[in-house]
Amino acid sequence: MPTSSSALGLPSSSGSLDPDDWRAVRAEGHRMLDDILNYLEDIRERPVWQPAPDAVRERFRAPLPAEGSDLQDVHQSFMQDILPYAVGNAHPGFMGWVHGGGNVVGMLAEMLAAGLNANLGGRDHMPIEVEKQVLRWVIELFGFPKDASGLFLTGSSMANLIGVLIARTSALGDEVRRRGVARLSSGLVAYTSARAHGCIAQGMDLAGLGRDHLRAIPVDAKGRMNLASLAAAVAIDRAAGLTPFLVVGTAGTVDTGAIDDLHAIARLARRERMHFHVDGAFGAMAMLSPALAGRLRGIEFADSIAFDFHKWLQVPYDAGFIVVRDRELHLRTFATHEGTYLSRGDRGMSAGSPWPCDFGPDLSRGFRALKTWFTIKVHGAQRLGEMIAHTCELAQQLAQRIGESPELELLAPVSLNIVCFRFVGRYGAECKSEILDRLNRDLVVALQESGVVAPSSTVLDGRFAIRIALFNHRTTMQEIDALLGATLALGRSLSASSSAAETAGSTP
Ligand SMILES: *Cc1c(COP(=O)(O)O)cnc(C)c1O
Image 1 (spheres, rainbow, N blue to C red):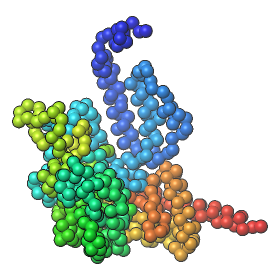
Image 2 (cartoon, protein in one colour):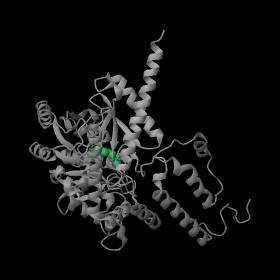
Image 3 (cartoon, rainbow, N blue to C red):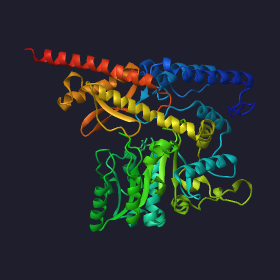
Image 4 (cartoon, rainbow, N blue to C red):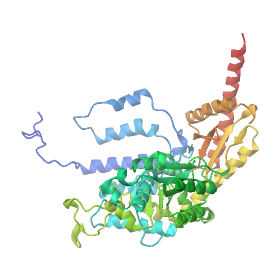
């Protein structure tokens, strides 16, 4: 037993986790900062993604360490075993899914926030004022009433769930929180586009209302919710004695970036007395671009909007947000007056009620507001809007290049920054779907494994599509060229080897 331990086995000196040698920690901290800044500065020299070798994964199956290690050694493990095998969304060649690239300013702010270690569940302190400042900017951006409420959450999955819960309160009153949905909710139905994100159905599920009570409304040729079908579905449900209570419009569908006609949905929702929620996970940030904001016309009439700062706005993960028109309704959905340990006062640290914990399910909450506040303050709204518009310009240029190539086929109109296409090569677009589906599925994996670019995929009208989502502020025409070059080269070689295999297979 070490001599420095007491009879209880505790260190005799102090229980503090602070370093004995601040100078050494400071020096190592500066090296850590340099390493991560170097990573970002030189990121173009790295592959976008590479799979982690088994030997590296194996090192993460070690038992709980009883003894500590040097900070320096753990930092080296990070550099060797973690950093090279990240998904690569900071890299300009990352074009898959809907991932933000992060930004240096936000990263530095996150470090400050971690040092401060603020808990934004409640109490009277300045970090909460920072969150309220961001809320006021959001209110200004969307043209919401000055007393609208809102808060940071992990992401839009959670923010959309909260939208569903607020709509549920609007339909059933806050009594539902006490008595449960079983007694009150029979017959509530919600509507969203067939292209809506899966978290809307999940929200219905978690709210106890059931996925079967979410109607998936067909979309038009541009991928927008068909308003005539929506009106018809509401009428059919009313005739069947059900209660339409919520319509969710999408501002930027995840597969093609289509924006529903929010203004028309707002009118229909008002006429039918339904809560109008917008899933603007990434698309809502297009409000920052004067060139794009007009596409979101009608968002100002929403009852609630869910969106992310961590996607198009490049705030480091995670930073989701919800803004709610009716602050009282929002409070009635979450506030409780239980728990004497959370009692409020007019003065002292328990002032400032209502607290953020009264507007959502989290009690302990991190300081997500700080990295967002820094990102917006340092870059300014105008530059952020231009950055967003630039990704849309790149998407238009990519679509144009696809149109010019006989070996490539565009599979959906490009409304924002998402381009869906496929390689058809010498087969041509008339080729049997299964052959092209298989070829393009292999091609997406080959592109990802090449380390040059990282697209994702989707299925549109039964056709497998290579999906390019341009969310990264670092992406330029250079990466678009690399994508096209690699797609043609790998596509040709895959189709050559598959037709060689076909020929070999057909020889007796
Ligand atoms: C990303 C996304 C979501 C989910 O948001 P998270 O932040 O990943 O939880 C919901 N809807 C749309 C349209 C999205 O793009």
